[in-house]
Image 1 (cartoon, one colour):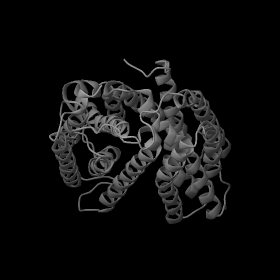
Image 2 (tube, one colour):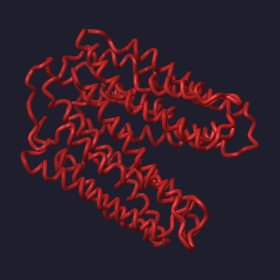
Image 3 (tube, helix red, strand yellow):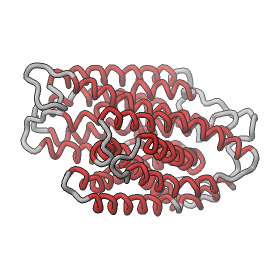
Length: 423
């Protein structure tokens, strides 16, 4: 494995640890905000949903704004460490302020806390994501770093699930939930702080290219706009499939409880599947091939729901196919940034735009899932479950989207050599 001069390989683990901490805050905020606002703040479901949506929209908008501001600071020679040093504890503090709300709290105060949390999160998240283009120079090492991100996010999801468990029981004391959330925020902060030293080291590295200098174009790789479009088309469907699994009507005994853990195992396995594809196909073709493989994996989900004998392996493979495109998308993004004429000097704005698109795609996927679950047909199960016919239709639509994304990438890759030819 190759790392830039001045970067020690253990720094990859520091980067992943920071990703675990911020993912813990993000996941818990997503899971608990609406529940807490309804159950403890006394808000109506409509108001709670609107407050949650307002926070997500602002976070998506904030990413490119923060990225552009940070790029301007870098051009002036200023460090990003002070802003991140304030943002990390600020995100934890306002995370707690948005969830530990007393009954009767007015919604403007909750919205303000949510906006401040999302703002601080972006101030830490954008430069952390952009560091990937400096810590790893080759597609192989970028895939390894993206894989570590995936593992860290998976561990954060497991930890968030455990931290959110007390909220599932309406009889749990409010004092206990306050203690759990406070300890979780403290753990997240401890994970995020060591990365500040890594940022300082990265800022001392030579930039990938000077401001306004002509950087090498990368034949066979999409531009940022094309990559964002592909991400919307492909990631919306893949995100929808992942969110749909808990709502399916499993027929085999034990599938309802084992489905999500097996899917999570597949997501962990995916961290080791990206590099072989890169070695054989190069970055763009590997991403196209991963979207292509996702289509039959999604189409096979109705068979797994029926309880076929191979359902454990099938769910693990589904988790792999849903996750590998995400890993390779980050590798592709790193290649696009490094090939940019302004290189590191526009990295934060470019990464901010990509994360904005990714978050909006995830939100659209959740919205589409809600629409599909809201349609009740004769013979359907309890509210919030998906019938086999609904699942089949969703799988067909998702598979179609992944095939379109694969076709777009494959067409781009045919115009020149793949990214594996660039060291």
